[in-house]
Image (cartoon, rainbow, N blue to C red):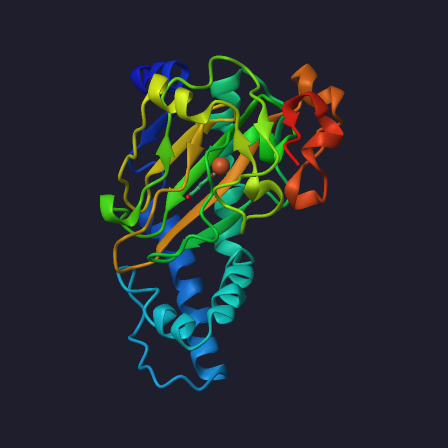
Length: 279
Ligand SMILES: O=C(O)CCC(=O)C(=O)O
Ligand SMILES: [Fe+2]
């Protein structure tokens, strides 16, 4: 499923972009259709005078901007609903993802992080829900032997703030984090954590922000540093993410494959050594 070169790139850089990994018509378009339906239902529910166009893959989200302009909380309603679209769940648990992970990691005991899947909607000029620099294991746990699957539902251009990645930053193992962020006092819980020596690490590894299109797949190692870009475009950045991990790895067995944020578990309870309490 990956070429030798893609495989080598993933091992070396801790991430790889796989163009057209998914079948747009069969796998992506039905998810866009489900989102279009939900947006239409909410436009009618809230009596918003916007004429939603007939469904098309290029404009499935039209009306969403009008919904959140009326009330930002309607966006939360969309966000919670869309992860329950069957076509999305089929993509999350598709056999190709499982086989890809099994091949990448050389295991046949493959897990999907429960509660660790969803569809992000990163709205233009909205800071609150942006992910700061993190590596996935810190926020998802399960096992250090894990991979993030990230795939866009709209063409992600540079101005929409593609995911930012630090190539090769997966090499040093688990990094410590400060619990609180003096620069972002509005952020709470896991959103507030800052990687120790963040600036030095970004200088050392550099930052890439690959653009992508619906059907493309970005894979990131659970130890690779990454963060949300800033959307300074005019359209919301819709993207899907889910996480696979290997049951076999001793680190997962040791922590009982426990989840983290989404499961009400705090990092300091599982890995006190990774937390610098700067209270
Ligand atoms: O899409 C983003 O902005 C962040 C994605 C991310 O952190 C992830 O998929 O794990
Ligand atoms: Fe992440």
